[in-house]
Length: 476
Picture (cartoon, rainbow, N blue to C red):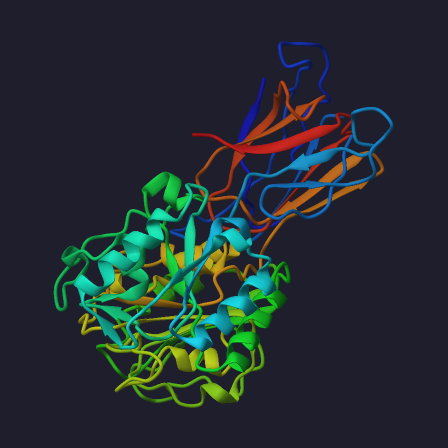
């Protein structure tokens, strides 16, 4: 029988299950008494400290993964691997599932698209060509046949899009990234009113087209080939780094633009400085300090609210960094009557966001800082984490390197017959089956069932692991 427990803890703890024996329909059995000592904090897309679990079974080993599986050791002359293989659930989209849309009327767009395809190994079949009017804002009549032609060329395997230009950036009252995602729809435009919500908001999906009938879209925003290449280099360099860095959350003296501060306070109250990532909340609502982060050397996140954010060029941004400022027209690129979101990319961030029309200061029209950071930490790509963090995205422009993934993969070690798994991909509140099998295709037998209450890095150990395959499967 399977043991069910919560896996999170404020301090390391050990759970031991008796070694399995006997046979059942899956080719073996599992279970036994367990001894646990646990404590943890719940979260709303935030985080808690890591824990350690030991599970007795029988042999295994593996290395990191790309969101789907990981293996260790060389294959034996038989069908089974020399060391056990641990298979993980998918935690992100793949490069093969991203299509790049290039504007043939714009030579820089072609250069940007070519550089990105090479940087990420995008299949040539995923490159879609359009011919755009060279204007900042498209009318629905201009845009709709262009999008229809793109959609007709996309297979059902394509889950997201990247646009290789900075203008046009808007379609009527929608951002062009949202217009490509949903099609032109006045329901996604509201100005100082509510707009149609995104079905992708805080979703667990790793296949948005398959699950929700939408392809989240991000602009590969750059005004020069050099800036584009630097952006792509940062994105690729970020992959799997698990950076020791800091997220800066700033409540400024600008009351109207600081409406996300409750999200910031919640995030820092749960995050406990694990896996090298910490958060610093600056509350300058009373004006006694500074509204700015300057000369920081480890910026992974920078979320604030100002019309213009000075001093950002003095900071050093970790590859994969997200940064945005809540204001009315940050989504106007390449320049704006306020500070353009593109400015964040120009100083070293890898992704940003801004609105293209007056949205009023509805928090739902801007990235939720806790949801963006938690999804990114759980191994999702930049485009997924950013898109999932905006409830009403119709007026918002998403820019950056879509496939940046600083927390990709999990670590698996096979030491003296024990399988040690360290992973950050678990979603809070979801039950996960840890299963074993004697063949990759199964049948599979459950060894353990558990969940975590908060986003975290978790380490657990399967003692005496003597089966060739193990896997982690989310229930439901």
